[in-house]
Image (tube, rainbow, N blue to C red; front, side, top):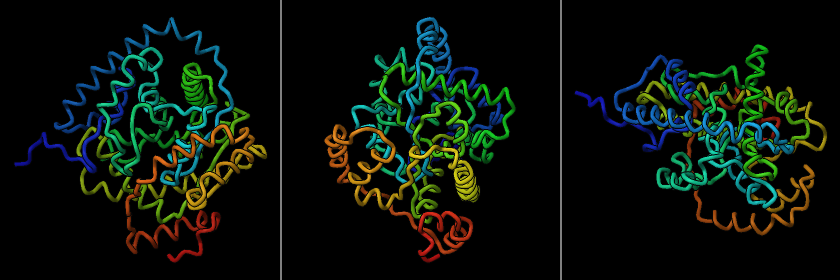
Length: 377
């Protein structure tokens, strides 16, 4: 007889991201998945439930101290990294965060978006022992003080994001209305915009340096981001689409298995591949449609292969093109960051002939657009 409490996770077991939610948002997440959980997840679900109650108490207690201060913060024109998953966005995010004039929100801040202001000094560092030293899907260094995707802040603040898919992956994709926000009604859109702006104000209140933000999903939200932050800068990273596909499939399988509130099943493999294929097309088409709205001098595109071949030179050019100021004050810290990565080895991901043919056909426009069409399908 199968043990109902057996932990079945691809890439090992990692702490849930859901610990930073408040009670109402956590309850809505569970209800949205129709409480389709498995027994082995119950101990951690109970722990998250207790933590969300504490988060709610801290948030409402600290409102008096922070509400007015947050409302009065002006967010300096952010820098948005909007390349697709697995195109070097994490590397770029961390290198830009090395600049003493810039800041990226940390893992702790993004996982606890409602409570990090009063708690990060007390418990932020304590969480280091709870987290793996490296990310389970690509071996990149991980920690509570490392730069993180602000999409997780949206998730744990109860705002719309396709990342809710990770909670109940066996039920398939969820939250897709929040990829480009086009199908939201006026009330839903205003709630999302106000909520996201408040998150960034909280980041900015904690540190007044210019924000560097990273989320692949933002490639579908360019009109909204420009509405909120007209002077924002954008960086779009591209990569060999065959590498993107294999790496993103692995990443999503690991995240869905680690963060799911139920055990993964073999049948998940097909929907993961379909999801990766469709999400890529959806984001690329939205980006191609909307990038002309970005004013001249506010958008830079670069290929992962060119960036990793000469990171210092490419970063210096990026600073000039986006008018981010002199690169000299950032150079020493960027060089040190790159030196720390010398022992890093990327996962070797292979694509089979059938998937290769599908990617070549369905992502043909991307391959042409960024100079990958000459590669054999």
